[in-house]
Length: 420
Ligand code: SF4
Image 1 (cartoon, helix red, strand yellow):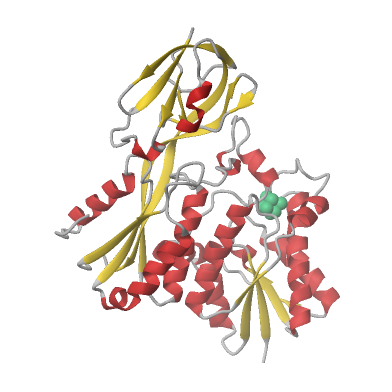
Image 2 (cartoon, rainbow, N blue to C red):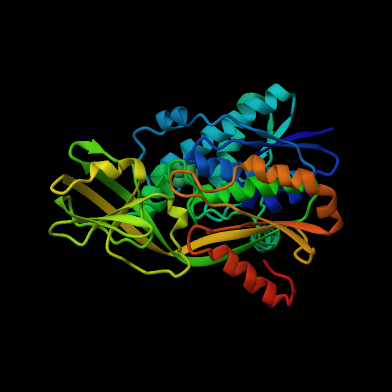
């Protein structure tokens, strides 16, 4: 019996390609191998892995997760950073991934290997075939050069990936390709890290949702994701110094940027019912000292650009005295194509719903832990499978409760009477 190891780069490329391999080689043993050391950043790598595993699980194909040896990959492509896509760097990148796959195939005692990279319309089939066959020759294996795209393969891939609600990445994977693709932009959103947080519309929020979905599906529970679009606002960078000390802070949503470096002094301190407002001289930028967390500020009504407001906890209240020197740097931006998603675990028509949300504040507080939601799935599994209960994970809660609005709209559209 033939044993085929299939190198997999992402769920989308695998969703039709694996079916085709199963069809064409029905009496063979097929195993997947996710090997993507080229992917940047690591959250993106994890996202592609989760989606790859979902696809493999749905087809009953075991998939091995390769090592994320990104340093080795960067070393190997040194000197080719500025190559265009499909250039010399890509050939080396294919080489690295196929060579590692061939090595594993040999170790596992497989006799054939292939790659779903041949599915992608952005990849050169002939180049992949040449690389694959050359490597196969060295390892005493056969490389299967399969024309996945023939016979409407791309349409089938798109249809299946839509049906399975797979994450569809918008760049090939490496940092150099991304630099080229985003040339001219001040900031490359894909490379912005939100630290510990899962901000609305961020990759971290999506990864969290995908991890929960993968778990629920592994328990045989049907899931549905509804993606919604919104105009996002985010902090690109911010610094707050009082005297020489850096102060940890958050930024009020929809704050505008501060031009350059703002150096001012504390002018007045106003005690309001819910906060202390620190007014600075020569500027409309404010600092709010809150007893409670940022979550307590009602964000229901989007303000769309306020004066810059930085928020600190009450432990810093004593630092702000009249005349004290303050330094602020703040860059914020809007993203007009932001997306978040709600996840329905079980049936939308279940009478009892348990609600969670997927996002957090930028410091990682104010949200749910993965274990909490998994615990709720485990505890209610029987009722969820019976259609009596459902778990709803809402997106973009900290951003004007956008997930809730999208969810309500969905209920109305589907004419389901009960709501939140
Ligand atoms: S653009 Fe894609 S194929 Fe080319 S080097 Fe980067 S990740 Fe590899």
